[in-house]
Length: 80
Image (cartoon, rainbow, N blue to C red):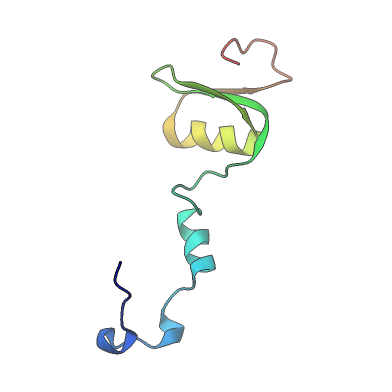
């Protein structure tokens, strides 16, 4: 991949976001939901189920993509 030349773009270094700032905007590696492990599961509207995530992560999945989530305290979740 080519690196951008700030001089050609007529940008000063302070006008360009740092990697850590970009990660805050775009959510790090590829998405905006955190990737924290825990005891919760998520079930998407199309039936895809995944388990072993934190409550914050599965809530984010559900808010972003729809579907249902549950943690180990929810005895009714049959997808985990």
